[in-house]
Length: 431
Image (cartoon, rainbow, N blue to C red; front, side, top):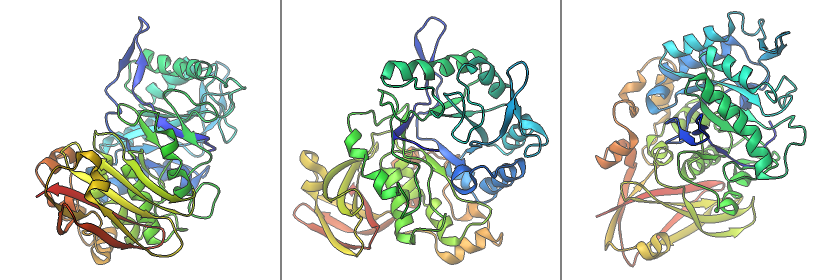
């Protein structure tokens, strides 16, 4: 789907019957899960969704917090005479309620897709003018998440108010169903106070809107909200889709975490290599994403949108400081940072313990053993269903800290060699 701003998953505000805005309790943290579009586009089916859901559970991804299984475009056959949506019975022979029930039975949540227009981005029926009917269908099917696009909008754009009214109609309709549904909308072409996205879908390197290209547009939207409820959505993750190096995928995953983007996997979880698995299961990086504090800010930047290097920093809710040296150049680069540069005027402690957030990444042998069913994921992975990431950081759980690499004092300069398309990302704790 084509997206034209940095989209915010405004999953939270729905209108009450008295016209006031109420919060349904969703979207306190960036959503985590899997979406089929990046790997499968229109090649979707009941079989794909249910096999993927089983993988999310069996590989320990559910316990890490990946909870949504989202069916994107291309699932409909049109509308019935009464206007209700028709499901493609060849792709989904048992109907959407069956898919939803099976996913719920695994302890996961089910998401679907529509558009605030007359048609979706792939040319299937959109929900413009059918908001109440479609919202009720989603609720009846047991849907927990609605991805709402902006294709086929009939030029009902141009001002925040015009777009707001279109999206609010679906918000109101969801509210009327009585079901709590995470509402994530893609409002491309029309910037508004609640929703913004970038030029194109996120793709692997070399395509129109690479992960690096998208990421470097984030600072230009610094006047938009960065904290929940409601989060940045830089599009689904491309990790594991085959056209980036391992270093670039680590960088991509880290950057999405730093700016609190939605964490929706976009690879084929049924056919995943060890390197991909060890990236998407790194709890030290996921903990950055699942932190209530605002997104990271860019301290400095040198270069353009695609060839550059930069320093980003963020304060965690437990008081730790996280910083990242990002090398978007085509060759490795020696980069450095100082405590005043990282903290600004908030630099008070005399010394900090420094942890490499990629230092304790799962090794290839262990990852392969889990993928092949020779070891259980629970022996090696963090379980956020037993202890939240916030509580884990408060309790200094080692899996969330990364590898201790030294003590940094006030006048020290931190110097590291960052690979091409790579990242060096660290957590600082007061010594």
